[in-house]
Amino acid sequence: MLAAVCGLLPASAQVGEPRNDIAIGVNVGWAMNKITFDPTIKQKMHMAPTFGVTFRYTCERYYSAYCALQIEANYVQLGWREDIQDGHNEPLPDTYERHISYIQVPMFARLAWGREHRGAMFYFMAGPQIGYCLGESSERSETWTTLPDGTPDRPNGLTSQYSMPVERKFDYGIAGGLGVELNSRIGHFMLEGRYYYGLSDIYNNSKTDVFARSNNGTITVKLTYLFDVVKTKKQ
Image (cartoon, rainbow, N blue to C red; front, side, top):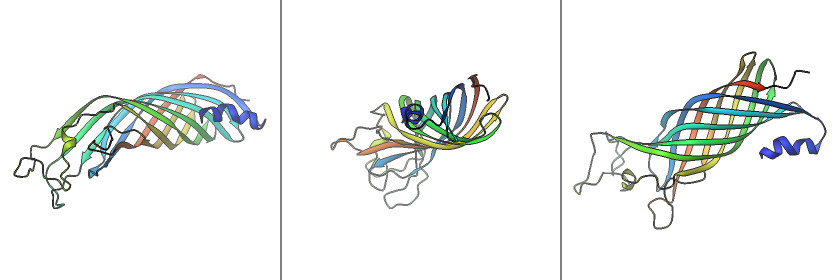
């Protein structure tokens, strides 16, 4: 995908205007995550801040679209927050959250439309993302409703997740987002929303394992500031 944006487009038609723009900067945001478990665990959104650094290389204007590659290195805390009910599907005062810290590296192909030097742009981006689990922790309420045998009272009797550490630390998937960018004398300001769908699982998923599926799904709202290191002169 990345090669197609900055390599294959010029070969298909000689209508592009080359660019050689490099911008770097920082990003901050808010990540809202759920883990898709099979068997199902009912959840609310796990929410935590995220921050990192951003590198962008703009290679061409193709018709009215500006084509770029964008790579980030971000720290984020994902995980899950259970919406706990008992075996009769009645709400309980019990609470449980698992916090899983990751370093993530998304690699986006980016297309933008609008004013290149001064003014606003709209953009779309998509691409692969990899991550690595740095550590984890959990929080549990003092109230913890159990059955007579001492196990937690849950609708499907599923309680293994409370004692299971992350078994697969490497995470990968696909991400995409939409945003707006304001270009000014002092740099580029971007506000965007993106979604990440994990293709990997945090737990082993063979027929003998507890979960057949346990992948991350993350909605992120992010603010980014970039400043130009190399900028094509305005024609």
